[in-house]
Amino acid sequence: MAEDELKLAAPLICILAVLVTLELWGRLAAISGAVAASVIFDLLLFPPFGSIRVNAVEEQLALVVLLWAGLALTALGVPKDAEQQTISEKLSSQNVRPGKSKDAD
Image (cartoon, rainbow, N blue to C red):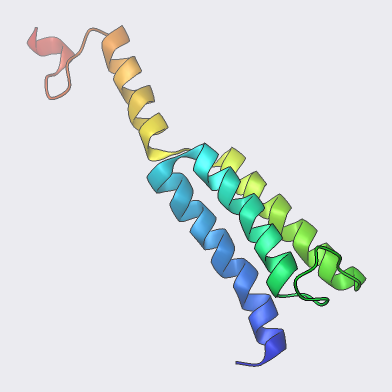
């Protein structure tokens, strides 16, 4: 894989990892992952390597877009545990137990 292709594919893979993290471990872990991914990319993928400084404007933009996309998708996504909690709250407010219909009582 060429260096330019890696620079394009790596952020997409990271965004996918942030979404998986959101689903499995929740919002805080996904936000931490998005920030960590941006810092790691800055240190390892863009010259000068090992430094937080990025010289090229295109690379700075790529890092900002990566961070923004990760945070935006995390904010818009619904973690699985939050979705289950919402369903449980709706059922309890209607006095319905899971597995039983409201008419059965």
